[in-house]
Picture 1 (spheres, rainbow, N blue to C red):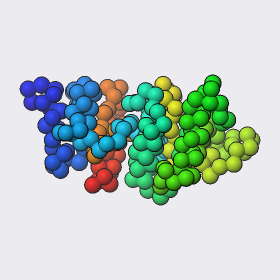
Picture 2: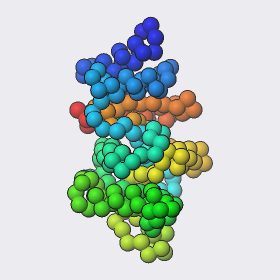
Picture 3: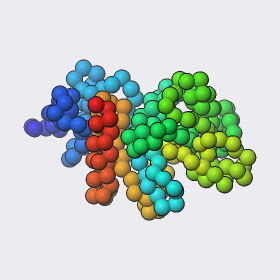
Picture 4: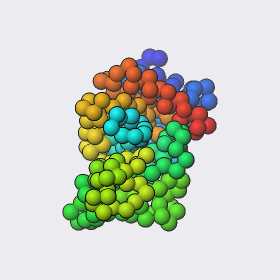
Length: 231
């Protein structure tokens, strides 16, 4: 390819035409690749919000879990969160979870619509799930991180929920919280991770320059699994 734009177009075209299962970013900036991939006319845009979906394995938790969105959307609105949840749930199902338990994270478990709008958003999303507007999963929140991953913490605080202490999916309120949590897990908690962008017709792998070879390989494997599920 003569430049990054042509390189992106070739890669997206191969996936769009069914000759490849997913896209992986190489030595190219993220912006032109995503712009080409999400083009409504020539890309693989599926009409949903694209979001970063990470799969985390940490020694202190009893199973793999999905974390989103830690790398793409700065401050999603309500409809954006619906797409983020759906994409995260689809990845959780790829990993074999029949009905993923989705925890909506915040700093507190109570709803404070004026001072902490993300708690109200979490409550609305939980109710949308109960009314069948978000399907194929169990959504609850707001949760503090401790209550989402520790049944004992939830018990002490009197929280009764099928999700508390057993979350398969953690949804963060904004990119700052998500990015810090993701990096804390990998850099301080000896976690292993993989990450892909979902929301398009096929997955996109956007490795960070700081990612280890192991993380990049795990992300490729995750994209291969997710890409086949998406058809």
